Amino acid sequence: MIDARITLVTLGVVDLERSARFYEAIGWRRTAAGNEKVVFLQGEGIVLSLFGQADLAADAGLDAAEPLPRFRGITLAINLASEAETDRLFALAVTAGAEPVKPPQAVFWGGYSGYFADPDGHFWELAHNPFFALDAAGRLDLLTPNEEPA
Amino acid sequence: MIDARITLVTLGVVDLERSARFYEAIGWRRTAAGNEKVVFLQGEGIVLSLFGQADLAADAGLDAAEPLPRFRGITLAINLASEAETDRLFALAVTAGAEPVKPPQAVFWGGYSGYFADPDGHFWELAHNPFFALDAAGRLDLLTPNEEPA
Image 1 (cartoon, each protein chain N blue to C red):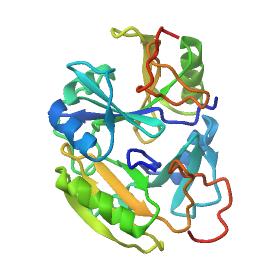
Image 2: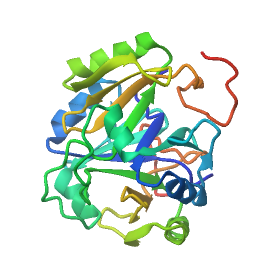
Image 3: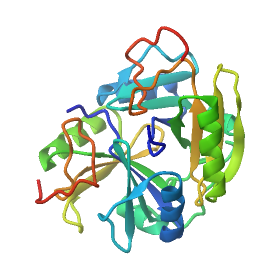
Image 4: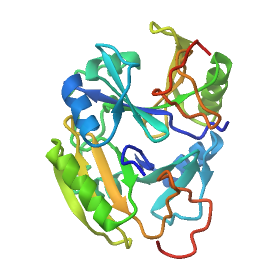
């Protein structure tokens, strides 16, 4: 087992139920592991945890008094197999309550990418990168050469 | 292929080379996919992307003028197989330049957890949760019942 992995991402949220419903609507599966303070949603090989903003800050010994800025220095990405898949998931997220920040579009590096913000302003990128191959589970493996654009 | 996944996490950084060296030191493998503006590091089933703060903000159409707050509303976690593994990786990260935010310790929910901040202040939690089983690749699967603490 290698250390280089991310088993779980925790998002600070204002309304646990609202956020849980949003992520369920875009494909994450709510598990029985949570309680009234935390929701765990299972994805492919990764868990998304939703936790109150103040609770999350306190867990790391931080003060959550300041409002979060719009740009938080980090984005989460889902690479998709085609431009059509990217458009489909983007539309699904917006229907579920996401804010459309940048509609999927051709970008300078040769791919197709868009951003939405979740109900708490966490940024997700949806992208089709023709130079990056995805395995059967949708994972990126950049160590195995990808001979030609998919 | 399901949509509920995170293929890549992008961290905004100030010094690309400093951050790349930090992540390499804690087990991520730098790939040939990057260029002078972006570094892609391969982990188990996920890619970590390092990108200039301003570049990342601009990519999402945001303004990166404000300094980032200490609490950014999101944490990344690596679940580990034991308290000893948690201590080991935490020490390795601190040696590589992480800020020790919360040394690994027994926490109220029955596990063992600590936080460090990377060179740009991104928060990582390292945790051993005896109620969550890890598969052979170190992934969490919360849909498969875990009968007894590991």
